[in-house]
Image 1 (cartoon, rainbow over the protein chains, first blue to last red):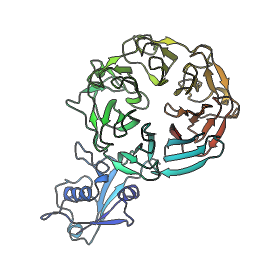
Image 2: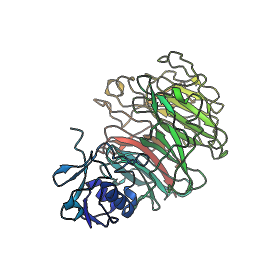
Image 3: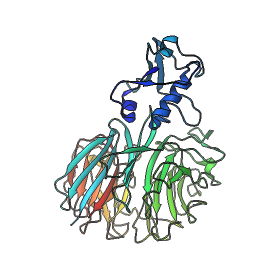
Image 4: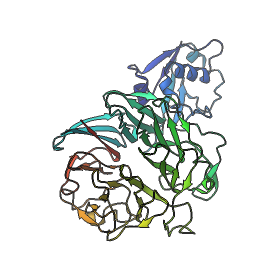
Length: 100
Length: 371
């Protein structure tokens, strides 16, 4: 069980009342790619809003945080921190503060 | 008598304005998609309750929404716009080649015969079509593969396909306009395209009468006269009487030939409307007077229309998709401003009043005339 915090606009788009959604992620090592795959499988309307369709890359103004760390630049296939994998800490998808 | 529904796209959401045929008292519904830019939304002429909306932000990209109840509820449809085949390059601002990339949807144009079919004009300039109500999009790649496309430049707003004109009498004819490339026409349903810019003169280009490279802001067409086209370009008002084969300058006595939208009266195919701005360095009305100009002669002879519009300290812009008309007996003209106002003239432009004054900056205005 993985806890994911969505930013305001994506929460509305997904139709979620709660700030967090809970996802079941496929077995084995939990990675950011697996979390995002599970998120998009559960909420297809979020396709393309976090990652580009073509490249699969994180959109430039979206960041990923967890356990007090910025995970945005880490490999999408690297294991996420254990406390995220255990559901003790949420994986946070954040819209960057931009625009002044 | 009929009613009207005005679909307004703004920088911070969509609004739906409704009134009876008097067009005096209005209900304002919205914002829909609050906080998102809505470049355009438009209804199907076949099924007026079928609406499509282009919703996006720089953060989370492009979405497309569909409504089957006139905008009371919305469902996201596909936002996957993938170029067909080799992507290729166009020119960037610095004249270096830049690979084509999808950035946003500028304009959605529902088919005139099938509510499930809708066209999307996008940035970087390309034309997509969905035949399943937006569940999937397929590029009409012949346009992007036009021999001139590697030389197309972005304008200040990007390399955008912003105008799509369909012809009810000839479903295979499609006319589009791209900033900054010009106008293009297909006679085979979008498979192949011809540049139709003969007669345009753009003195900011090394070759002012080149086949492509012209900054076309908007093209309008009366549905009953598809060969008569009216263009607001960067520097002139132009008209064509042969479906775009050639153009002539009809700017006439306008105080400025710069502006963005152009519209045609619903019942008078030679009556056209523009909103001149002071120039391409200012993008606001001259001396703070907001004035629509009307020509009843298809151009050249223009009259200012100002009754009910701000005539002091008004420095707003009116964007290319932000003007439309209704089809009631006394044709209504509508436009929205960068200052968040939407104006209506229920008598063809003689008198104006504001419907709403403090929306976010208006990107688009589309009018539906309902039974």
